[in-house]
Length: 173
Ligand SMILES: C[S@@+](CC[C@H](N)C(=O)[O-])C[C@H]1O[C@@H](n2cnc3c(N)ncnc32)[C@H](O)[C@@H]1O
Image 1 (spheres, protein in one colour):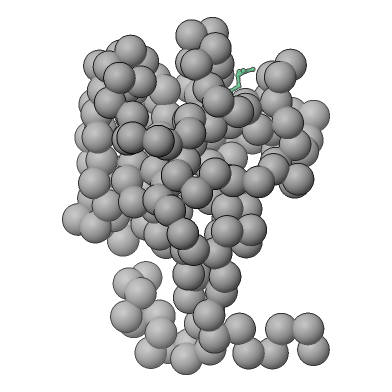
Image 2 (cartoon, rainbow, N blue to C red):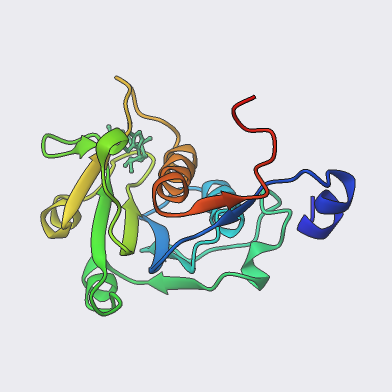
């Protein structure tokens, strides 16, 4: 559903406000275009500044019905090294992974300038990526979530903590 249509239909719609800084999100060696499309759609709605993929070009899929590619730039990198050397100035690289060094997302303070990196559906984040991350966060749960679901949760957590939600009439009642 397009945003304009939605607001007309539901005048009480809550619009996220992103707070300070910038953020992007992407996947290392994604295996399905469907997951990239779904994450891209969340990134668009949660007002990310950019998306990226490492090691896999993107082919258009139907999961992105909002045509997010028209609104949020997607960067494609050949390798982790290529991606890492292109990080924006003063941005923190935040790995999203169930890993021995992960800290809980629930209490994590998101950096103002952050790039969130998710791992491949089959293998997770590479050892090199994990080594280079400034922080690694985990979402509570014993089993792995779908990669685009995990990314969407992280984006929502950032908005809750770093941003605010406008027009929140009725909250707390
Ligand atoms: C399906 S999982 C990969 C599972 C992989 N077979 C493994 O065991 O490492 C795909 C990606 O989703 C993200 N993910 C899934 N569940 C997560 C969780 N509970 N916390 C943090 N990241 C998660 C990570 O980025 C992970 O690399």
